[in-house]
Length: 122
Image (cartoon, rainbow, N blue to C red):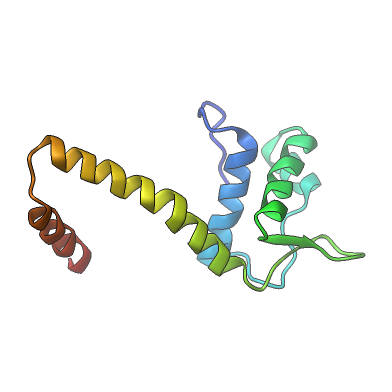
């Protein structure tokens, strides 16, 4: 996991996003234990409270759950929840920016859609 300490994005958000990326890529799987707060803090040389804040955010998002006697466990529906949130937040923002830029450049809707199709299908 890489954290950019010079980024404007808070470290705890970077931790949460990195864990979600590890889940999406299959490095972490539903039903498995997630990285612990202590391990994250030690490996990233950060305050354990910061690592804990990133983990708590994933609990709030419904990605992780505390299982009695164990560490935080990745929920069975974590992949679906991550994808939905990313579509709802990230993709929507990217599409909005793309459409705004296309309008500034006087690109017709059909041209933009054709360009997207070309990129999507390679």
